[in-house]
Length: 313
Image 1: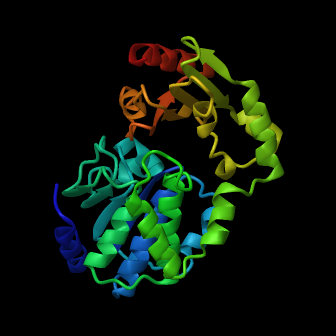
Image 2: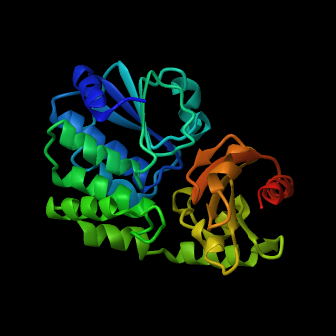
Image 3: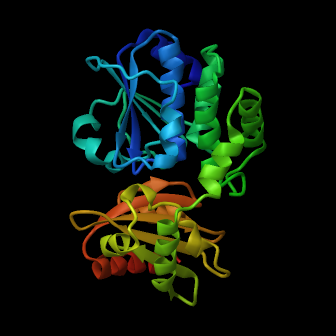
């Protein structure tokens, strides 16, 4: 563990920087990555964001203001990546060469030369905000958009239990710095395509309860996606569905990927720990929200998850 002054000094000494996000990138990993990239580029450095998996169209605005640069990599930073497996298709290339890890997951298992993990931050973007202050970086509109997106999405528009007074203060400062907060909130929390609504309708039919309703499980399959006419970049935001059900302690969302792999998103209420659950399968996250990947058929993976849930509950 180190401090932000050390992180700032290290970044100021580096150039030709790759910034890694986690697989199936969400608003926080992308917001953090593009905000950091903007900060570094504005300092005259070469920097670029390396994503894994399809990026949803609603996040495309985050790359605005960031120049596309080609260079030979000299330094690698990961942001909001809790475990090596969450690097996805980039794991083999980058797992053993990460120089700096910036994260807010207490379960972080990334091997890096330098790690800055601040578990009290509601989002990795909050750390990027604090880092920007230490680095005396100007908060431009694109940077403000990235930080606001990260904080708002990881707090569920400031509704989740990880939200702190600092989350609100940072969001307010980003608004004052010109963040397009109204458009961001609409895109992140209100707007849905017809295909997404059709998929959600199918997902509700998969809902199953276990252990007297304390565990709820939903799933999506590639066949369901094809039937709904929805792309992989739109299949997100489903994980909150089972947790919203009265009496559910552990809500599990199974999402089929290619090659017999399921992406597992876990959300918990008081009385269960999502991070502990996902660590069983090599994943990680927070007490209330975590993720992992499990190989097998739908029924095989579900059986593994239910067995693990029984021990936890």
